[in-house]
Length: 633
Image (spheres, rainbow, N blue to C red):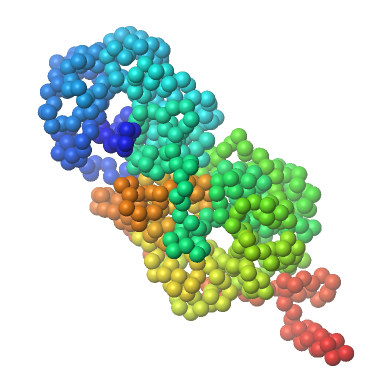
């Protein structure tokens, strides 16, 4: 049996897991054997919902064993508000036709097209071609979603069939099944956002189905109540600014890198199209000193460098503890010969990102990125800096290159777009104090559970904001949300510092179970429970869709709101002893964790010096003396 929920005129059903194989789904077995089986009577007593959908399987089998599902259905008490009865067997539906209460509708459930229906001896594919005959005994049909929106072998959508319009034309309702947030075969068109899939069936220009059968009814409900038919909706929580009620900034992580290869022109264009507030460029340096945007100094991570420049592979302990092909070992002309290479974090689990665009796009120099950002409608840019001390030792002045590029493009005097400088290296942030309009963001790339008062003072000296890992903002134990680091965020906010959280990814394997495999729930949680000032995401379109919906404002008095997850609630249902022991608390951030070693010593040859090095004490004294003499002369 199944239970049904209704929002307006669209039915949303919770489907039993036995209807769809869950072998490929990333679901915990921690609740197995805890809850008992429910009868229909239990459902009515416990849920007390005004609408019930009863699905009957294997009627012919029961008849062969002297059991009549027809008698069972006809004998249900009047107070059982059965609104729909479905079955894949035509004979049962024909026998029930005309015998049920007028409010109860009969629905023919279609199995695979090559499966033979037992009473007619026709395949379900043949039955689907004769909708008029179904109209004689049923009010509608229940079909797999791919019979409405077919999907090719590469997991991309093909044009929709005419099934919904054909059925509606003769008065048949159409309900679709096969929906699950954690479906590894979800079409790439949806970018791992299950709400986008539901909208494909209820909010397109041609048709809308009458019902959705799903393993995750809250997500289907949010799609119906919050996102459908809202393209012209004027409501949206404003980003941080002068408004009293605002939302977090939507900050990209290497552009819309969940859809296109990171830091490419296509990734940035998609991010702007999707509604990002801040687009980011993590600056890398080529061997000949050209600054460009890429998510990692190791070109193996997101380009085809491993094919063309394998001989350049080496280990640089100051960068990472494994071999790589590093940007500073290749000239810009060599880097330009590479193709982007889109690799998702869960590709080995068959959750590939947009493989049709795997090598699409081109890398941008910092100047090209700044030119594009200036011409776009984003509210700001984020410039990320890593490994500056090491680059200085090999004669590459990344801070100087960035400072010059920003000044040359006019960003030092920019008033329309904000500039954020992000780094975990405090000397780097200190170097940008000379640009008072820029906001400096300290990266804390390790888990912390709190921050000491002296650390807050140190951070305040060099930064206006802090970027935390997701695991520092929330406490996760065995994929269960166990709590929030409220004190950490509050201390930073009390010091008038903004808190950014990331990196958010849509893939369900990246989400705690408490988020129901729905990235919208994590966004809601980081917004209202963590109280983040900025969300760093690889899928800015998902965050933008959430904030454009009136359901994103939990303080509004609406009938449906996308609520944040409640920490600790889900794990309470698990059997004692099955939950892994809680890990030790993350450490408190101390000043020693923040203060970096000084910049490297300058080389003894002045012609090879850069502004990103420090003079030895004797050399510094001599230089100061020479400078003073020059000033006096």
